[in-house]
Structure formats: C-alpha cells, structure tokens
Length: 265
Image (cartoon, rainbow, N blue to C red):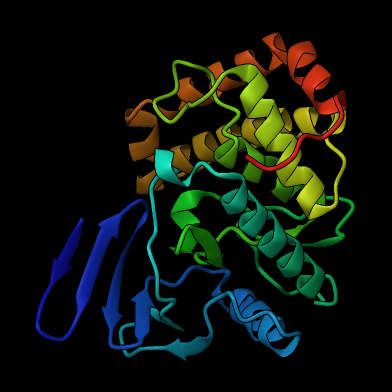
C-alpha cells in the first residue's frame, strides 16, 4: 500500500514501513545496518551503483538511503516474463557479487543470517522481484539488503531463479509455466550469470527454502512479528509444497538443464 502526503510517500508492505522524502528513503534499521552500510559504500567504490547509497540515520534511528527510481513488483508480472528481463537480473547479480567479492567481512559485523561456506561473496539473501527496481522491462537495481551475509554465489543464484523462473509448484499463486519452461528460464538465468545449471542448483534451491523455513520459525518463536505474520498467512505450506515439487520434478528439470541452450525468447 502506498500513501502520499505533501512531503513524503509511505510504502506499507512486506516487513517494513518505508518513507520516501525527496530523493531519500527512511526505513527501520536492523542490527546489521552498520555492516550493510559499510557494504553499500564498498559497492559504490567498486563501481556498482545499482544499490542504494547510505546516508547514516535520522533522528528517529531509521537508516537513510538514496532512492532508486523505478518500479517494484511483489511478483513478476506476465509482461515481464521475458528472457531480456532474466538477462538484466542475472547480469546485475553477477556485477553485485563481483563487486562484493573484495569486501572484507570483519569478525564484529552483525548479519541477519549466518555466514555460509564457502564465503565467496556477500549474498544479498533475498533476490526477488519485490527487492528489485525495474525500468523499461529490465532490472536496474537491488534494494533491501537486510538479509545480506557472506556465502557462496550459488546460494544467491538459487533463490533468484526460484523467484524469477519461477521454480514454484502449480499450487503456488506466483507459479507460471510448465516444469520445462521453468527449467529453461532457470538455465538461461544461470548461464547469463556464468554458472552451469545442474543438480547443485536444484539441491541449493531446496536447501535455501529449508533454511528460510527454519529461520522463519525460529524468529517467530523469538517473537518476531513479521515472521509470525508470514506463518499466519500460510507461507510455510507454500515453501514446503515447492520443495516437494522440486524433488518430484527433479529428473525432468535436470533433462532440460542438460539440453543444448536455446536462443532468447
């Protein structure tokens, strides 16, 4: 939901209430904000300008970031299910990872999610349409780095293809396409990124969803309101069904991965 006043726009949805004031965004800061702002400054110094620029905190303790102009979608609309869109998202993810590979994660850095081995890059942790900025049918920026953490490249790629292919069961409201089409789109994304699709990718998608479920339940038990709301909305059942779907369709998906790459559609 978006509310507008004379001098600010309020975006209410997902986990946070975000306020835009001019060319700045004010959003609740997490315990990881210090490490994330250091990461964002590093990205810009490394030439990656498709992420917000940090400007510290306001008087209310909210983090202040630059606003990235464009559209954000809760899920990928039908008109954006193009190979050109996939190419832009995969290319940007590779650029982000390459820029983050030279970031030094210190022992005192606090991340919302645990570091994973091998810590090749800093993972965004939640590459999905709702955390991407779109312009003219392409992904031009990433936002909401709250779940950033050190990890392997494939950990981020796996979740991105889960959301963008999408590798969803037919019962998932955001699902689209046959298993073959989903696998083709996932393979396209991976190859543009520079990672060959295969069993490791599918296993990592399943592992990523299992980790998401475990984290959501642990946070809910600890009193996190957002996680409690997600559970009440039935999100765990969707992820569990997607895991069953990926396991059931594993050989079918792998056959498409192994086929010669087709041209763009």
